[in-house]
Length: 312
Image (cartoon, rainbow, N blue to C red; front, side, top):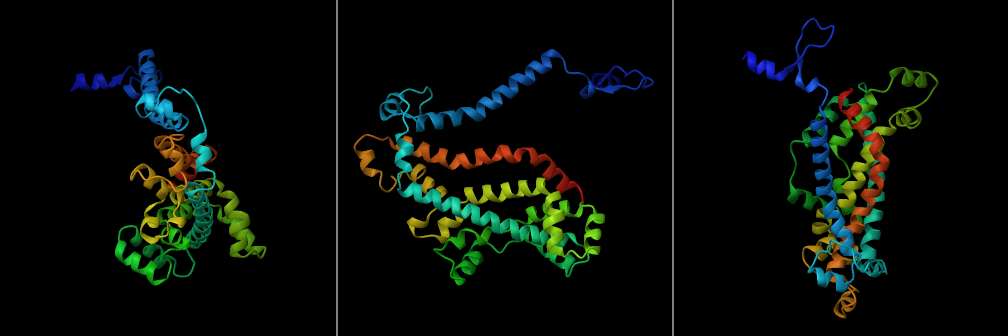
């Protein structure tokens, strides 16, 4: 037992009166730092290599893809024909516009409702505060299921409408709870002084609470936006008109079902465009918004999630 403890501990720190120090508090050796660097490099390569292959293949000509026998690793004969054809006004262009509009409208609606709901639940003296909170918590563990949800959407006449892509997934209880915890950590002195000055709840929320909660609001906005942009299931069961399908469903048809996009079949049949390049280009288009927005929200991620999850 003593040998095991001596293996897990190091020499005592100066001034600690002989206490043993755990090995994880020791300064890392050069070999340890080198091994960590190698592991991190391998992990980065494992993440970036598939992305590199997708991008290079989408920019490759038919000849290059044919010579490579499929996916291209080394770029040769770079061309933007696949992107030009996709964005020339066909099915993919229309699907991209649908996804952008649904994402923007859905994110704004979800954030407005979530912020107001979280602020109301953060005021412990508000009307029906505890029953509403318990009801929301119950929905995290018990769900109605797919069939009742579909019957509700159908009964409201939302099938084959863009509202069917927004309303069924408009609220996320976890996001509301994170916002609520952050709002509860706001200094009560500021809110009380604002009430003394005659400010109402909406003005307090807009001018005091939200400016102090920019970090968590940015993170939750990213969560909702990525959710709407990446969603495909709702459209697959609620939308039957191919003209209304978002980009993710069109990508599913092109990549998994090997269907050819409307308006590009002739170009593909003539040999001027590779179906594989089209598939990879659609995947890149679906990835661009998330890759562009994530770095701007990353600086708020740690503060928004940790503070909202711990405080309150």
